Image (cartoon, rainbow, N blue to C red; front, side, top):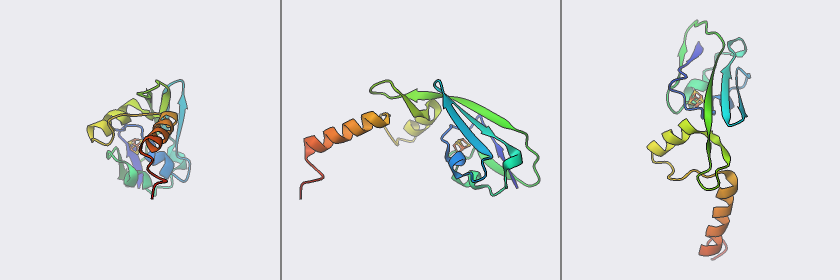
Length: 127
Ligand code: SF4
């Protein structure tokens, strides 16, 4: 079995890249753009990428001879400070559509807001 990627459907979440043990899937974030690439010669056909994809953008086909392919996405910016994040714009739109988060923040702003919340609510240390 070999994976075939529907890059139109893909949101650039990297779940498949992280699941791939052979390096057939790779990515690079540079200058506000994420590029995901598939190198079929390195693929062992385990199809973990099919299992983890949240939007069914990967399907497995027996004896499929796929060529190299890649896709690019615009990276999203933090809705508080405007810093580039490690989410794609498409991924943010998809997550908001699902109601997962109302606001997308970068790691630094998330940390700052968590500390602020803890200080305001005095939560974690209170018994
Ligand atoms: S898991 Fe699916 S949506 Fe996420 S990057 Fe891979 S193909 Fe795209």
